[in-house]
Length: 618
Image (tube, rainbow, N blue to C red; front, side):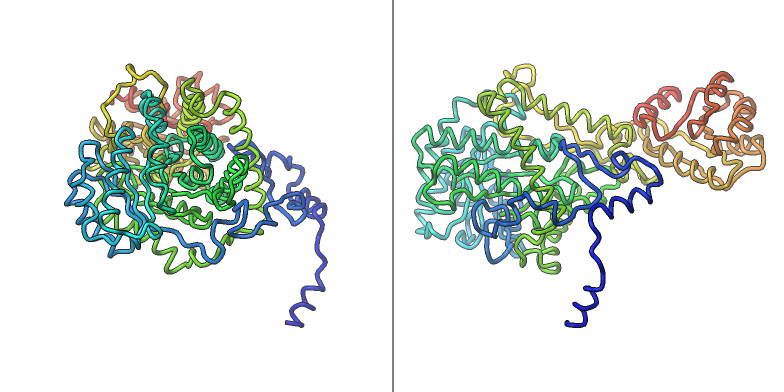
């Protein structure tokens, strides 16, 4: 140890300015701000490196686990979380059998989604038959209009079974505002049920009633800072209503639970959960609770469906695995990993098993449950935590200025904000500014949909109010990949064209552009034929026609297009669509010769492929 310390003491610690000077040299005159500083969607900049002095003015590194404001987690001695699986109840006996089965396969938290017509004493008794309710976490949810009745039935069941209320951990979820966001329904008449349910279950110290489902925002495309800011405003709306109704502050705060989504932004999602606890603790503190523990934020995390894909669906496993890791390291109370096949079918036994094992893997093999807040002290994550907290707080204050979250939803402010983001993300995906591996980037060339179609999941068991009849605006929840998937399925069902790569000239450029073009066109499900190269354009065109190509893509260098493109176009003579791979300086000259199709990195991939389908009569 002494020798090691002596060794390190021989190295001089470079200053921040020395690092910047070195970077400037390596950039060779390029703009530091443009090349290395990342402007996030969340509204703040991220530097390429961070040092200890960047934390000088931050308070988060001074916090301790299990202590106010809980930025480092609610627990002091572990990072344990509940491994949860949800069950959609269509028949109580079948749901009970499934629950008993998965409890033997690593699950210690059950979620029952009960249709309103099944909210009966018999349903509750059947669902919980054979389950030792004192050793697992239970979660019940139904249509908000039946939540009070469900709470009464659950309470009656636990009382009849003489369970120790101190040991029971369960949730009877009540979140009417989510229905306003998803269906535009007017739920204000049933908001008065919240204090009744809270009061009914007040003797259960580990119960949760009022729930905030910002996973809905994540699955509608919300950026991380939007979900965080609106979560605070949403939770504060319910907390204020409960306190105004005469509910004790500590009881009202303790019974709240946040259902948050997890997106693919690994480090920022870790920071989001840390910032969420920090800010929520500060909000609850303003209500002057008697016990600081009432300010603890209970979070259930659910991996996103927004970025899941129908094609190349096993890539969804990679997405949800990193999301699960973010949630675990962020210190959540419980977690649901969405099965990889959720976009196109009811989850199978296989996909549900994999989803469970994704959590068990990071617990049993990677020991994510052993270390409390392992990201603490990371200059980068501490900075992210602070930056997210500041930006989210701005959103919270803006909503408060509008009269609170409920009023903002009535005005459509929240819906408009999220829908604008959703549309921007779809536009970015169309232009490949946002990548979806296997969908708009590096698609599987030979994959077919094999009957897979987007799975529509009902958002509520309540009566179906159409958008036209709804008094309030709603969220648009189309998955990011849906536009490309619809195009690819349409191509597959109509006619699959063949695109032939006429590779000629500079070896490196023709190969690079052929690969780019194959990926580009395969996004619509086109059959692509790559080639090693041709000596003349006539040879290439003849080979393309022999292959019955619908599209011929000339792939060469910018300098050589002036030599090859026009002769190839004329020799083809309209017998197939002609495309130039790239945006050469001679583009205007090529257009003057009649060439009108070019594909390059600045193209809107989705719109270009739709245009090609139209030209091909697909």
